Amino acid sequence: MLAELLWLALLAGVLILLTTAPGLRRSYPYIWWCLLGYPLTVIRVRLTWRRLTTNLGLAVAKRPGRALLGDLVVRGDPLKPVPPRLGVPKLRRGGLDVTVRLHPGQVPEHFQSAAEALTHAWRVHAVRLFTCERGFVTLSALAWDPLRAPVVPYQLKQRVLRAVVGLLEDGRAWVIDFRRAPHWLIVGATRSGKSTLIASLVKELAPQRVALFGIDLKGGMELSLFEDRLSALASTRGEAARLLAELVAETEARMQLCRSVGARSIWDLPTKLRKLPVVVIVDEVAELYLMATREDKAEVGEISTNLLRLSQLGAALGIHLVIAGQRVGSDLGPGVTALRAQLAGRICHRVSDAGTAEMALGDLSKDALDAAQRITLAEQGVAITADTDGHWLRARSIHVTPDQARRTARKYAGLAPTWPGLHVDEPAEGVYLR
Image 1 (cartoon, rainbow, N blue to C red):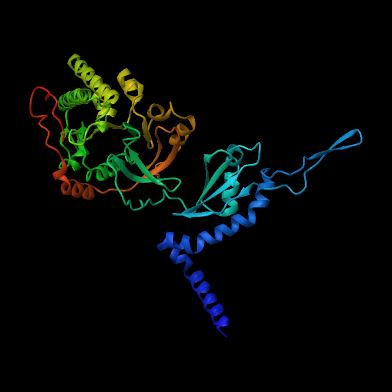
Image 2 (image 1 turned 120 degrees about the vertical axis):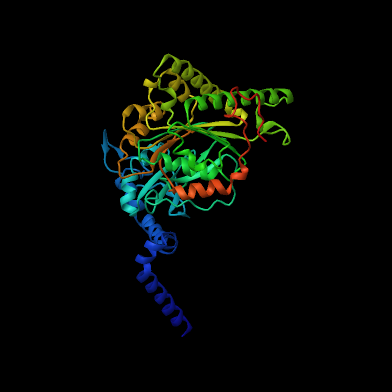
């Protein structure tokens, strides 16, 4: 009697789950995935693995497909091919990971070409491949497109100079880490999502003990949202020239400090002597390089030199650049090309001209360049991102409204260190930021 009641309760639970599954998937997709989507996908993975690997040529017979018959070598299809050993599918947020042991002679590229077939057979959004150990590959299945409505998972611990700004196409958090890639180049046409990404970045950096500076030659229209949190905001080219000169002086002062105590970077300094990290955000960088008169040429040359010096020296001294613009091409001059070489982090939204995409991604990967040029008008916020590891992925930033930006800046305005620059005619000499 008890056994029958247990079976009835189990059957009732399954019926309730199946009945509520569509609504649960729409309203609480992660709960639906854990309760129903993941178990069903695991069953599909197990049931289809042998047939899939056999049809795709990934299964290998223990004996060769040819034999000696008298004086003839007879070739044929091997019987009972053995599929690569499949590990236990591991549940993760919005997907699953399963490790596969390669047969001798197999390489990850064999499975890369089979990703589309695996996607259809397992009825998931996409299957990505990763390699972390010799002789093994990890197949990562995504239950749905994480870029459709990115929701960043809650971060238990926040590190300085590390900002979670959105989601990657493999479901992981999209992180801009200045300790890993000290300088970043962000390009994108109007309404491509570039400003939203910058807002998301500043929103994440605002609660941290970081000094933020802005250069916005569109009259400060974009970065003025964060003016309460910025230590200085330059809205004209003259102000930008003075601010960059002051930051170069700060860099030189930090170099002298590190040399005096035998440190190779500010991170090696004793805690009492360590200076605040600095992040300089430059919006519409092309405006810094435009010249109309002979006087402009001298000013542009000074700005170009100081930006290049900051990019070359700033990484070890805690001074980081975020260079953004709608159009960033080699036609702006050799200074831009030299600066681009120092910007290890690259982000390319939808762009209006191929030259800008080429400047951002052309020296990294042709495939990344092609993917960036395929971003459509409807994919606002979607970008191709790449950093020091040489890999690229599609990503999408979380949406930050202007009101959210202003509230965040006001909330953490007290963390903005005082900067005496932009109010004097000469650069401040070595103003240490504590």
